[in-house]
Length: 179
Length: 146
Image (tube, rainbow over all chains, first blue to last red; front, side, top):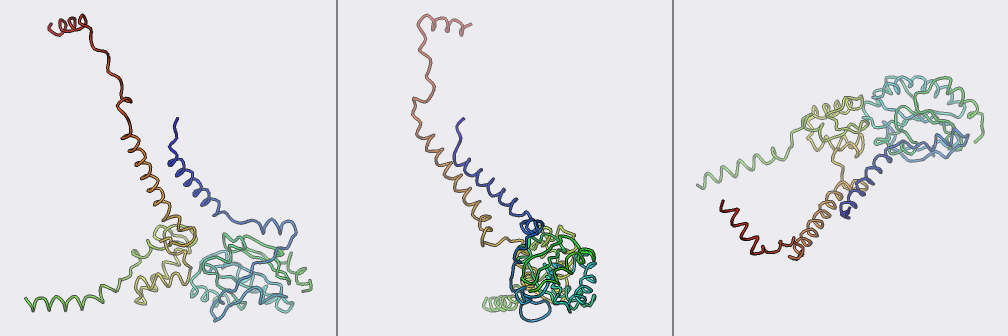
């Protein structure tokens, strides 16, 4: 059978594009695999606008601290549920060189600030309006939490809401480490 | 006639600002923006983030913003990805280029096919059967005259 080459070429191009579209949407699990092996990959750093204030902030500003980086949005119910625990954790670890840093993602800033006021959150949050930063952590749902050690490396991660047991498992030993 | 033209001109001048201002409405905007989490147009989504986006649009309409101003405010809050129009940068360029390429390939194909058909010689056509012998011609005439 004679194959008409332009049709074949067009079909191959379309199949290639489809494959790219399907595979490029998949979540990146590189960090999960590294952390599961006990490695501590360097956390992505980017200067992002501070939520509810002028200026920007990044993980680099908090080097030397243990940072509980929580990716959240005010429209996400599980995020809202875990926020009081994160606030409590922030208050508890602040004196030990630790802190919580929120990354408010794909959220209306007015609603986000309203929510933080409602739960009396005192930790800082930055805005990742289009999840560009979150994608570098492989974020594909909310909430997700990453514990960054004093050297700016990812020591633990949780792809769904955290609980006290998970925080207790990781935080004490990381807070005990020296910068 | 002159007075009619003057009235028409005055009407156009007065109407121009009204025409330039595109009145905003939720149904008009929600089919031009995306639900940022679901990957569908906002008008067909009922996820929590879609509800928030819809409320944001309603609040902006209540503030008297135009459609373009509301879309700009949505981009400020949620990023460029909120616009349903894919734009022309990066990989999105393929969305505009692929149909053009496919059309070009089809055009080249048609031109190629036409050239091939026109270049065919009569020898390619099926040969006619040999002429009838006098005996066969006589028999055919006999059969046809029945």
